[in-house]
Each structure stands twice: as structure tokens, then as C-alpha cells.
Length: 459
Ligand SMILES: *Cc1c(COP(=O)(O)O)cnc(C)c1O
Image 1: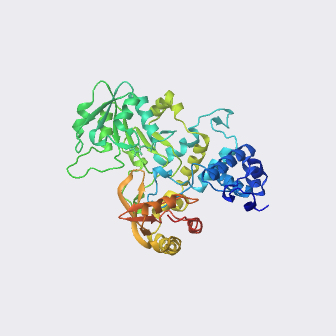
Image 2 (image 1 turned 180 degrees about the vertical axis):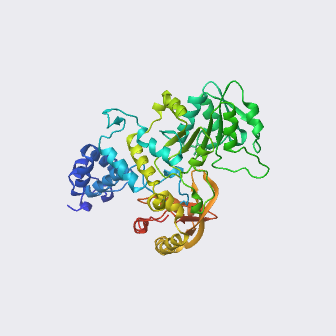
Image 3 (image 1 turned 60 degrees about the horizontal axis):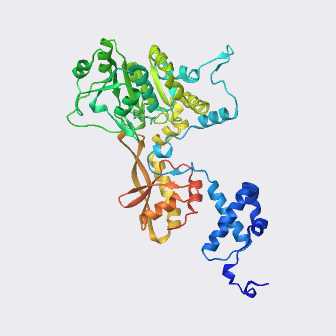
């Protein structure tokens, strides 16, 4: 019977859940998500049609329910296109891992591994043994340990060495890294008394020497990763702080922040202290991150004097801050790449993206500007532009890298940025001078990017 013959308004006709479940359109979602979830989704979909005063067939309801389930099934931790121009974007997960690291982590996930097991003796081994030797080789340190991240590395060092005693730091280095990581707060949580010396812009050797007393446990240097103080400034070099500490029989801790295992001068960047330099300058402990310039998984390193590392490893907090087998596997594979520095820019995405030639990035921008313009239509002006990328994660705040991108102007720009975030693979750009800029430095898979972009629903 045709709907108009029923006497009920055709717009109001709605299927029952049972009818919709039997529709061929429901089959795929039923198989994928199961009956319980499909019934719930059908109820919700039919209720939505009813609320809008719309009619629907069983097929319409099945399709609407399928869309609901598929949307809810999308992972919350979504892959995105990072076109922000910030290579190590903390909010976007920092370093992209090398293929060797991905393979190692995947293999470790699938299998039992000799994580704390000494295969030569058949006895219990140490988790740190996986990376200790290579870390010592790459940094020149006597010993090394690995924890959850660099914040944890700093916390653990301060607690293991400085708890109940005093730690001396320059006022010019009392950094906030972001979130709640502020050096004075970390010191308080570590149970060490912060002794601030010098002033914001100037700290002298005599300030360190004068602050040392019976209760002093260590002298600390913090690399001012994410800012620079310029002008009338005086800072005491790590070497000198280490000498002052050693003259009084005290250890010196140098928190490098990003830290790098190789000299980056060859990559067109300002000099960032290497871990080996920090060790050679006399620091007894050096802390640094695994997922900043190093280009590995989130981890924190402590390298330095054997006796101190042993003291740190005996601290119960170490157990709470340790890393799992997946990260350790990825980390070991990443560190191994550093044994062949000539191939590093090829194999390690962080270095590849830092070293990417501008001409290559310009060519990407020139190629994708046209197709982007076609999708956006006449309301938006799209043009390839020159722009500047940065390393990110607080590494080298003053260094910018010449880059290229696509500039989008027009209205409404905020709504367009939101629409880009709604794409199957969300595209994240940056708003700059009244334009939405898509920096192409980190765009390597153009066909995938353009195929994804074609799904854009214009605001
Ligand atoms: C980034 C940074 C930290 C924190 O490192 P995470 O790996 O992010 O935990 C600590 N100290 C300095 C100087 C830093 O730059």
C-alpha cells in the first residue's frame, strides 16, 4: 500500500527496531558491532528521526544507526596531518618514530621478550641493560638509566640525591616547561629544598660557592630550553658549576631538556648542547628527553657517574617511573640509528624533517595549492607561500627553519579550520596574520593528503 493511502502523514512513518534490524542495510554493522550495540544505535537513530518530525524507512534507520556506530568506533587517539610547522609538537605527540623503532615495538608487543632476563645466565636481568651500553657509548657516560620522561628523570634525581637537603639553582634557570612542570614545584615534590641564587639575568660563580653549606646535596644547571634571556646577562658555564661542586665534594646535575646525541650545527640550526658535551664538561648527572630532538618514544634519560646512577636505581620511585617493553624496544632501535650518523637524516623522521630541503617543501606547496583551491571553491583564496617552521617542544626557541606552505584566506576562517579538523584524517594548520597556513614541511604523503582533503565539507 502506498504511504499516502494510510491516512497518516508520510513524513511521520518510522520503522520498528525489529524491522530496521532485518533490513539488508543493517547487516554489515550487525556483523561488526554486534546486536546489542546495533539495537541501541537503532533506537537512538529512530528517536532522532521522531524528534525532527521526519519519516524514515527501515533502510534509512539502519544507515543512520550504522553511521552512529562507525563514528563512535573511531579511535579517540586519531592520526592527524601535522601542518602546524612545528616538527616536535607536544600536543600532537612529538617525534614520529623511525620504521626500525616501529618494527621493534610491534615485535615486542607480539612476543615475550627478555626484558629483565639475562639470556647468558638464565637469571634475572635488569631492564636498563637493554640500552645501558649504547647510551654510555653515545654519551661517554659511565652509566645510564631510563624512565618515563625527562620530567620523571629530574624528579627522580632530585629525590634520590637531594631529599631532605638543599639543591642550589640559579634564579635565571627556574623554568616552567608547560603544564605543571615548574622547577620550584618539582623540587618541592622531590623533597629537596630549593636554594635560589643570583638574579633573573645575572648569576656569578661566587653565588654558587657562597650558597654551599652543610645541608647542600647538589648543584643544578637547567638548560633554558624554551626561552632566552638577552642583554645584560651573566651565567656560569656548566663546566664551572661542576668545578665548584667538585671542589666541595658535591655532585652537579645538568638538566639538558631536549638534549641531542649529535651536533646539529650541520642541520642549519643553532648549536644545542650535546649530551656528550655535558658529560665531558664534568656533570655527574645529565637528564634529557627521548622524544624531543632525539626522535624516539617518550622517555627520560639519566646518564652519569656509576655510584649516583646506582643510588638512583635503589630509589623506590624508579619502579614507579619505569618504561614498558614497547617503548624500550622502540628506544633501543632509535638509539642504534645513531651508530650510523651518516644515515640518520634518512632513517630518523625528526632529522629528516629538520633537514628537509626548502626547495622540496616549496614543490609540495606548489603541487597541492591547486587541488586545495579546487576543493575550497571561489570563497577562499589559496596560494603557495614561504613561511617558517620551528623544531618545537621547547627545543631551540629562537631557531626557525625556512619553509613553505599553502595560505588560505577568506571567510569564515575559524569555521574552515574546524572543517579541516572534521576530515577523516584531521588537518591541523596554524592561523597567522589573518590566514590559515598549512606548512608543508611535515607533509610527506601527498596522495593520501589530497584524497583525504577531497572529503572536506565546506563551512
Ligand atoms: C622538556 C624539558 C623537560 C621535560 O621533559 P619531558 O620529556 O617533556 O618530560 C625538563 N627540563 C627541560 C629543561 C626541558 O626542556
